[in-house]
Structures are given as structure tokens and as C-alpha cells.
Length: 148
Image (cartoon, rainbow, N blue to C red; front, side, top):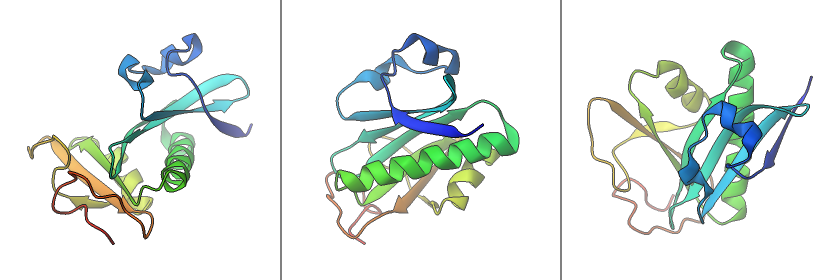
């Protein structure tokens, strides 16, 4: 069965089974849900940080190869959304013990970088970024998030 991805309300009752954080319902957040038929199978969010986009997720069910395919589709959809609103860079903080998640982002063209935004460096985090366009609104994004 094919997967469809669309913008939805993160507070909808049928996405609660995916562990969605309620704070993703704010301004400047685009929340995407992947569905197989009517069943939600994943989500991811783009937070507009006024200069770059921060990615939350993706969170997908099932795991394994099918989950990776859904995760790639969600990340690609977020990249398109970020370009549409004029963001030139995406950033992600991952837990260092999430090798599968880090590998997925690296397969999508993300590279390691230093901490960004309000994050500080620690051994438990890995910071990633991907330049996605020529234009970039650099505001308080740290030394490594600069125009391409």
C-alpha cells in the first residue's frame, strides 16, 4: 500500500499513537503525517527558526526498511516545505546512541556540524545540517550555519 504525506494538526487523536509532542502545535511549525490508507504510520515536523529549519522526527512505525522508506519520504517533504518558505538550511539534533537515525539523515545528505540554536555540545548529542538552497536567512544560527 502506498504512503501519502500531508500537513495535519499534531493534536489530532489518531496521531497520538505515534507519540506526538503537544508543543509541535505552535506557530512556525509545519507538522507532516505519513499515512497508509487512513492509518498514521509516521510524522515529522519543520520548525522555522528564522534563518534555518529545525527538524523534529521522523517517528515512524514500522521499523526496518519500510520505516526507513517512510522516514526518507518525510524528510524529503520537509526539505520541499523549507525551500518553499525560503529556508536554505536544515538542522537536526539526534541522540548519539541513535545510529540508525543518524545514518538515515546522512543518506539524505546531512553532515555533522557543531551545536546550533540554544543547544550546547555534549557527548549524548550529534548535530547535523543540510544546505538545501542558495538563499539563506542567517539569524542567530551559529558560526557553521552561514550562506552557502
